[in-house]
Image 1: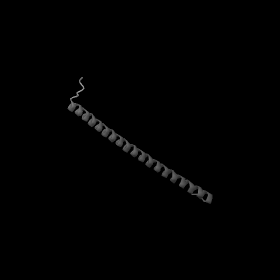
Image 2: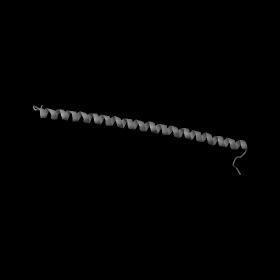
Image 3: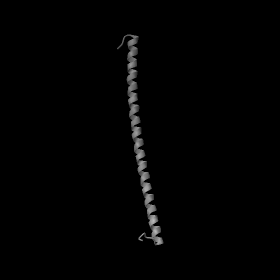
Image 4: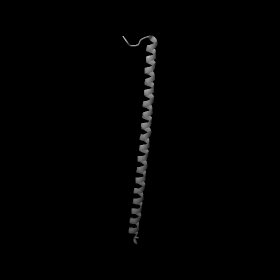
Amino acid sequence: MADTIQGKLKEAGDSISEAAKKVGNRVSEKAEEAKDWAKEKLHKAQNKADEVSDQAQNKADQADADAKAKSGDCGCN
């Protein structure tokens, strides 16, 4: 324990510095977790959009095939 004012101020500064480092590390960890969460949600949304797009394309292809079948155009010629 410091006996002088200068020593006490240095100890206080060291304590504040250490606390600030801990807080900074914790904030950094939480920011990383938030970034990972956002990436995961983005990937899920992209996968869902791709799935819906594929379904729409399949329906369009089926509708086209049905229309050709009804018109008698089988594409055989």
